[in-house]
Length: 253
Length: 334
Image (cartoon, rainbow over all chains, first blue to last red; front, side):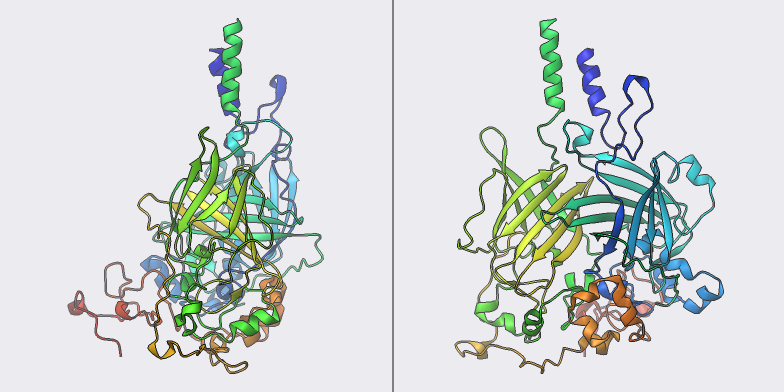
């Protein structure tokens, strides 16, 4: 029994569950248990899909995205003037479109359980909540839909959270729901309000001091996609915010 | 009590591995949801977007013609370690262990790899800088949490990306981070080249575990003559400097400013859009590869009533067909 109990307690720390507090105290916060430091200024290196990320491609240029017939029909009907008239210039700046955008990110801890991800591109703010709120949870279903939706997050510890020692590794898994319908691409490639945006955030540190944040992400939309759209994005750490350049949403460029 | 202690210690030993690592063995399919044109039908000529090329790299790339790979000496330049980032087929990963079941090496085979990539995990040192460069290069790996970090050196000269002549020298080194999340495998590849790049070329790609996947086994570089008139002629197909008619292909086709497509490092970063804003107007309509994943107009899976242009994929003939024409062979391309 003791053997089983001890083994189980060690394994129970794996896959997202923060370790329990000692002597029955409160569990350490997401900030305290972070296996890496995601805070700071990060810049997207647009070395992939350049023509679709740095500029607005032609209407109907939907290549690489597994759109359904309905998705293609909606993309063909894109009209930025209509979006402007409706005050919906930010349609391409919802979470899935935003992360592929030519942006810098400023990541900070808003509090012990909330990671704030700001973009200068479109001046947007995402909140990754590690306290169980947001995402597919009860609280998430109750709120109004927004461009950035509600995001629940958890640390996924390397080795399932087993092992001891000073060096710890892990990643963030986040799930975003409750998003307003938006665009995956600036030229009106749509996702619906039923889309679920799942991300895995990994930090890689190089011998020369460079750091890269990789966001492997999955857009799952039963309305406009035939199959989940899966990509990876990478950001490089910057030493400060001197290149931070907030710009408003723009429906055309 | 003594027996209990032994059991407890044994259980703890089993549950606390010496170094965290994750199983990578399996077959993976590439997810062509980024850079589809390059990875599927093939690169646009003169498309150096997303690159930070040196002047020498740019000059060399602009000498390229699509006849160049037809010469025997250059037919293998398209094949390089980690070229799978730009290829349409998948890869297979497995480990080799010693008599104690410790992993000595991870092995990767895949699309357009000239030789199996061997990632040594046994701590062996890197060879001398003067050691032989090989088709697969020399790679060592170490676990950083659940990520396998690889360093590859001693590679041969090979093109970066696919099919439009962006050069990579034999002094290139690669750092690769391989991370698996459930069934998704993400590679972050950082290529440094002091000759042809002004800063590291960084790419992140995702594959999906799929035991039925199209793995694309190791390719043998075919060195047959493809164009008879070139045989024993000494001719090296090329454009002279300043005379490449495709240098402005991206401008003609997508309205991009010429400089934006020619691989200047500043073009990789968001602030470059300030330059682009006054110089760029989107094309009035999509002219090539516009159908996404619904290319086969009139065929199963197509979008009813939507016309699209496949950019010359030939047999697919993505024209809108009437009901009575469905299932008939496609007309010959003009």
